[in-house]
Length: 293
Image (cartoon, rainbow, N blue to C red):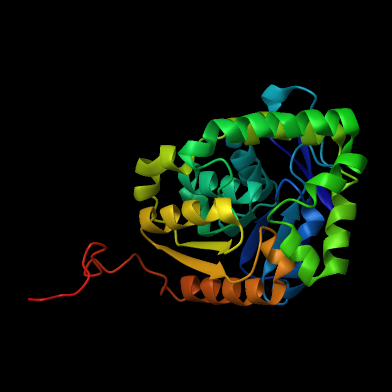
């Protein structure tokens, strides 16, 4: 365990295990660095695996100024972790909030990414729900402040795309919910207001995504309704991307279906490292139904 310091002086808690090509795991809003334990244990057998607590999540620093939280800072914090460990390039793997950070990592610093894995990302992206999402995010922030994580986690952990996890794996879901209850009230509120409620839609990033040539794996659960369309949009927009949809699965992909998640991620990384995860063949014309000449 160690700390790295960002350019704006925030100390981030970092943990690592294993040796080999680096993989950096970036956690979701409802989780923390410990949410990646099934992946840290699996991939550390042949990779240098790194996970960290985002700003606002203990034992990392928890700034009280909302302007010290943003989507750009979240992406740059991932770069700061690599810098602090002396790592030039890594496979970047993010879930939900971490998936957004992973997309922005690829847009801002593509030269530092061996690949990008964007899992369960999309909330607030759909343009018709954008303003609603911003309002709900601010309401969630208020609830974390007023009720505290210990109480509000009981509600948040039973969201429409979380109950799938509870139904499949009650012990795993309870561990997730108990961990959520320990989050910083201040850090959760500031993250919701500063990052979640202000981040741009993927549709607003279309031109940049079209020219982002980093190999990208998009993963989404088929019952994670507000991530399905964003996932398809990313697939259609990022040149060297592939889409994996997990059946009967919600939002917390890496914990809900750890074996499937690990297998898919391992195959993706193997193809990238073999130079075989390529941009879509130009002959695969999206508008063509059947070839006639």
